Image 1: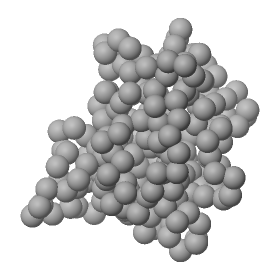
Image 2 (image 1 turned 120 degrees about the vertical axis):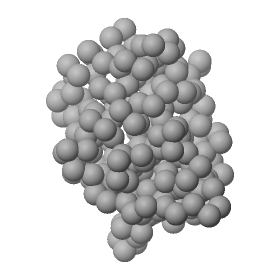
Image 3 (image 1 turned 30 degrees about the vertical axis):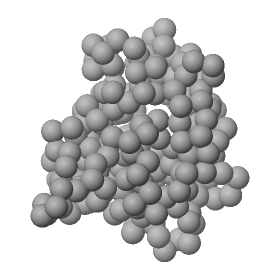
Image 4 (image 1 turned 90 degrees about the horizontal axis):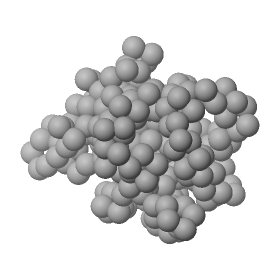
Length: 203
């Protein structure tokens, strides 16, 4: 999840993530999403999540290389953005990552793909910047790092004049995103027994 700043705490700068940040960012996001309802639905066993999620987020770090990847020093928080027209999971992307997906999720691959398809189905019809992933290390929450990293992306891409879109399966994140200018535009569920998610738009 992302986090609100505790009053009086200084937020360090946010910079572009490089290839050398890949492992640290992936490990941090695995910790940040350890209790995320969507991840819990895909991988109900906590030990399996802890083992598999770093590989999953490393794969997402790679797949978002054409977008904007931001992190704080020490990879305490990070955001992965996809540019206009890049949000959907293309057939080519699925083919490219077919083996990593299968080895990461195993028998849970069906649920992972169901989530991905549901996410794609709820994208806005107009061009937008997509906040694909945002996370803050649980050990560093309360310092405003997650919020600052999201804001840095908004500031960086704001000159495009396009809106920003995200979805979250963590209800307590809604208020934080609202404080960053997002509003809820939809609430939906993956299948009959899947997680509930909220679509949010800024702009």
